[in-house]
Image (cartoon, rainbow, N blue to C red; front, side, top):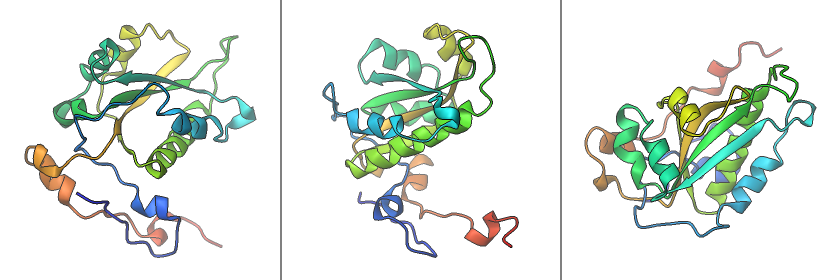
Length: 191
């Protein structure tokens, strides 16, 4: 399967029009030790409130004990397809400072870091799929995260597979055209 390009109403970067979230991953692909360094470097340089950098990651390559722990927390359809990805990454927000003060913007800032990571990964020929369907409490217990770290999302990362490896209705979703709300539906006020 080739890339699913977005149909945009204004020009945007090619990397953004080509980026999409597949469910079919190449189950034979694996990452050498430093293969994801550029993606995490992009996350590192994303903006954050007061330069607090309130993001952390658990990176688990397929076949590892950590991968199995994360995979066991996935819900619904996610559990059916995510195991073929080269790695699972848990996206963590640092929600408290060392003195126990809440970091109000931590999840927002984590989102920016993950967006930077996913765009860089795509530019490097990798595919990422974000998932909210997982048990955050089980992640916290499995990795002894404590109260300062909150598991916000899990993502798959790897090389693109083929839709035929997926069962219905996942295959149908994989082949469906991309769609988004129109820009004017997103902007509440535009003076």
